[in-house]
Amino acid sequence: MSDNNEFGSFLSGFLVGGLVGAAVALLMAPQSGEETRTMIVEKTVELKDKTAASLEEAYAAAEKAAADARAKAEELAKVAQARAEELRQKSQVVLEEQRSKISDKVAPKASKKAEPQEDKTEGTEAEKK
Image 1 (cartoon, rainbow, N blue to C red):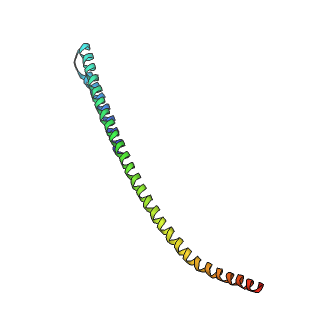
Image 2 (image 1 turned 30 degrees about the vertical axis):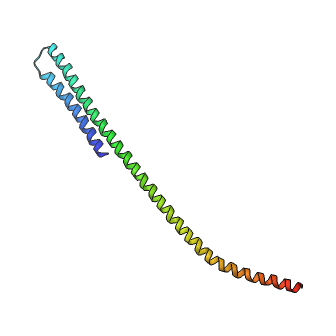
Image 3 (image 1 turned 135 degrees about the horizontal axis):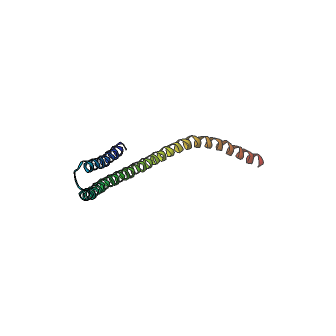
C-alpha cells in the first residue's frame, strides 16, 4: 500500500510541476498573443498525452497488483484446503483409535455383566423344573 501512496504522490507532483512550469513559461515568454495561444494549445496536448501515459502506467500497475493478490489468495486457499483435509484425516484416525480403546474397555465389562445374568436365568429355569 505504501508503494501506491508513493506513486500517487509522484503522479500528483508530476502534474502540478508540469502545470506550474507551463504557466511560468507562458508568462515569461516574449511572444504575441497568437503565438502564446498556439503554444498553450501545444502544451495542453503535450500535458494531456503525458497524463494519459501516466494513467495507463498506473492502471497497468494496479492490474498487476490485483492479479498478484488474486494469485496469492488462490494459493493460500489451496494450502488451507490441503491443511484442512490433512487435519480431517488425522482426526478420523484419532477418532477410530479412541473408539477402539473405548470398545475394548467397554466390551469386557459388558461380557462380565452378561455372564451373571445368564447364570441367574439358568438358575431360575432350574428352580422352575
